Length: 238
Image 1 (cartoon, rainbow, N blue to C red):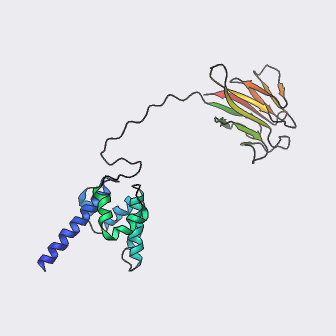
Image 2 (image 1 turned 45 degrees about the horizontal axis):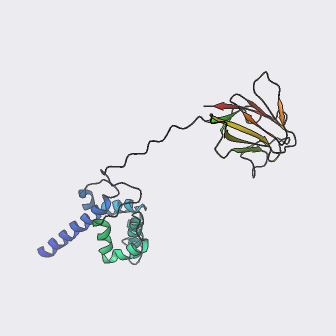
Image 3 (image 1 turned 60 degrees about the vertical axis):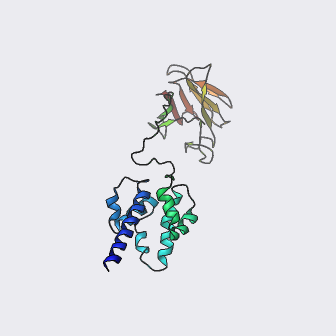
């Protein structure tokens, strides 16, 4: 009986060691935690990225086969290995030993205490160009202009900046970024054949210029008027 108990103890400690070898690739718990009954299975589920409630299924006859495949298969998948090969292979121990003692690492994850590659230094981002709504239904809202630009209009299927007023056309105007002669980014305003037109002006004292199926290059502080005053937007640079 003593010999059988010793064999069981050695087998258990070795299993805990295998679990720890796998677990330390994902987390930084010590070996002692993997010697704790049930809690070592919780740690294994965390390595697999599955709920610890799967442990309950390990104690249900027949269901435990599926739970074992699911847990070890997900551990393998997170290490860029075959889900089914390692999940089914876990019953034969060898694939588990390969995960534990092999060189496989979690995808896109550095081992705890492993030196990480330095992050690349990126050039500082250029100035952000935004539209600030000064009047209309979106008053005080601020919208950043993405690289691909945006369409102002009433139709949510074709416009990204939606104005619900009936004087606004479905696709009323388009605003996009442009660089002129190597200078800083500017905004290009183009009327998309709107019914009630698009206007802009360079300063508060300047006259409104009307676009009709035409375009203009805008500087910061320019103001855009949609459909004769339904909404106005100021170009800001941050």
